[in-house]
Image 1 (cartoon, rainbow, N blue to C red):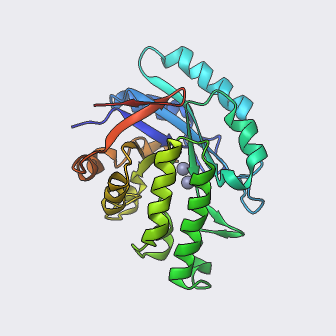
Image 2 (cartoon, helix red, strand yellow):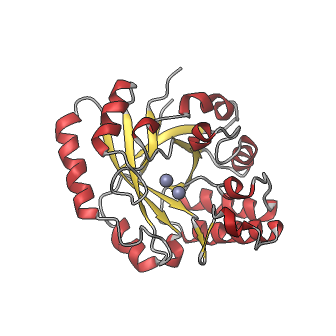
Length: 258
Ligand SMILES: [Zn+2]
Ligand SMILES: [Zn+2]
């Protein structure tokens, strides 16, 4: 079975991506996708090399040109991946007022520590690091204003530990339900040879048991061969969880796909 959407893709408008928008669009059409969403990075943390890289005007112009060219074949959605919006409320207000279809919130930084920074992981006691990471996520989901929580247990990629503080995680899911934030299933694990997507089916089940319903699938692809990668292979594990509804966001509104 195929799947019609990739809701998390990076392009040359992100400092760490090599794929052009047009490459992803052509790949997506060849893969028979109906929706593709470009969620380029905005990281305001001064330690992030991309903090001054994102050019929203050029981004919107490029999307508009591609919509003119390919709009009869595929729906090209305008997205944004904004890291720690609650810590940068002015920047978030300015950017999120633009005409995005879908805004992902993500936790990339804990102060000056990037959550995948393996050379520094040893500085932290694992339980304390997980508590800190998920506490930032709790504050971010309480702040709200975005549509999807990106790669929830991403810290696992750095620590290798599939472990999280359940009390905080339950509060994150409660915030999400209250603030209309969907759960992203991020399939970058597939091209990294990891067995489980972000978040794991166990976390997605807990989301459903806390009243969460909406999920999106995204490859988090940064390179030309990444378009929609891992999504089809990952679908079944989440489709089997009762209560979850996969969909897309258009003009910030959730549209179920089944
Ligand atoms: Zn991210
Ligand atoms: Zn991303």
